[in-house]
Length: 403
Ligand SMILES: Cc1ncc(COP(=O)(O)O)c(C=O)c1O
Figure 1 (cartoon, protein in one colour):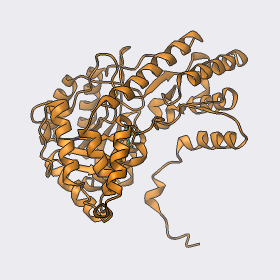
Figure 2 (tube, protein in one colour; figure 1 turned 180 degrees about the vertical axis):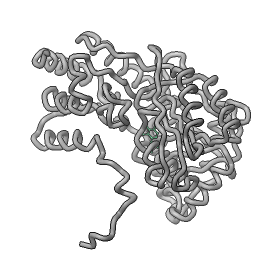
Figure 3 (cartoon, helix red, strand yellow; figure 1 turned 90 degrees about the horizontal axis):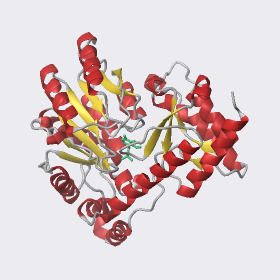
């Protein structure tokens, strides 16, 4: 019906690459099969008890049942500002430099909606967390892919990054207005040092573009590595915002709490668009999120250690079956190159076969953009026992389907 009425905006979104894996997974589960599922970055642990207790306490108070404030209650924005002071020694004004969001994905999409004009150009790392790319596409803008490279220790090859960035800026028309970065990077786990942000901020000021930096995995760092914030660089607030989420750090993915901080002009635009679109998160959730950020942080250490331990178990057991993968220094993922004998299949077909034959689900690298081809992303959301079982299943798969 009404064939002449086209929904053109939606047509710019491709079919979700992960959908075909999800369909097979669903079918297998309906048939009673047990799938060892490493495909989604959805934390498997519970939210720490003190946060749940605060939610329950706040939910019992009728004054918390009405509409909230779309940019987040003051106490939550203050807790965000305190978190930055404690963690990075960065000062943020809770009124003008902080906006609470319903998860960082919502914050990111609405920010892009607020600041992008049709036809704008944005530069995004490739591969990428898909919405980093498609938020621009949805708003009629265009994206220039910047392929990233990393070394054996998973540090970004910054010379190659800045070379390609300068080339893209020089050759693009119109001149790119936005650069999106995300370190620790999803999906590749690539990390950067403060020096990277120093150079990026300086180029942004010279070339006149805004930076959006997503540090969703900032707290999930292993060994001595610590994720820097762009705001540790003097003057970064002139050109940048940073997005963050409570989803991973506090096992609060379903609660939908995140925030965007930094540049006043961008924060004002986000607060304004949100004031038209929503009435803010459920008050008890915001009150509990305040406790998450301001309360005891032992739970963060526990959550981080669990991922680090699983990562060690996975690397060791995969190595023992001959699948060598680089050790990540941060995030909740392992980014694994597909073994040479199976590279010709492509990552989607490789994942389908592994799923059907070994009952193990990974995310195909191509789902994160064409530069993700040849890899799979493994989310560390299964326990040790199931990681070892997955490795046994994979060993059998590799033996059965030897080239
Ligand atoms: C890099 C990155 N940014 C943002 C998000 C979204 O987090 P949230 O749950 O806060 O929307 C994710 C989720 O996987 C992510 O990987």
